[in-house]
Amino acid sequence: MGVSGSGKSTIADRLAARLGWRYEDADKFHPPANVAKMSAGQPLTDEDRWPWLQAIADEIDRLSAAGQRAVVACSALKRSYRDILVHGRDDIRIVFLNGTQDLIADRLAARKGHFMPPGLLASQFRTLEPPQPGERPITVSIAAPIETIVDDIVSQLKVPS
Image (cartoon, rainbow, N blue to C red; front, side, top):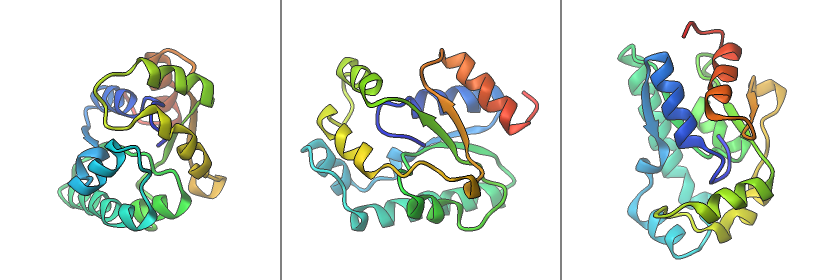
């Protein structure tokens, strides 16, 4: 989890490859109206997000029921959003990709072809509720190189790589 530009897709993809798990990008679960709204520079409301979050939670449940493991890249900025995704399960871990607004703004300025415009970053930081200890988060700094971040996550997950 993390704000746009924190490296969710890149880190989740590398983590999934390292673990031999499936990778899912939560962005693909957005309905077209959400993508259009964000592309127009408008932040999503909670009403926009509920069906999207439920679709992701349903996919997590489906994969789990099929005996599959996955890494899902999802912003999950608020506790209420993460509660929908986790819904009391103890086999789901939240990984928080933590970085400063300046670092992430620099990354977004260099990124091309993504529907999330850099202008929405301040809105994401205002919305962000960092995970609390009761959520059992794994918090990693995004200032490190990608492989170092993945190593850190794997060691905290205590899953053989």
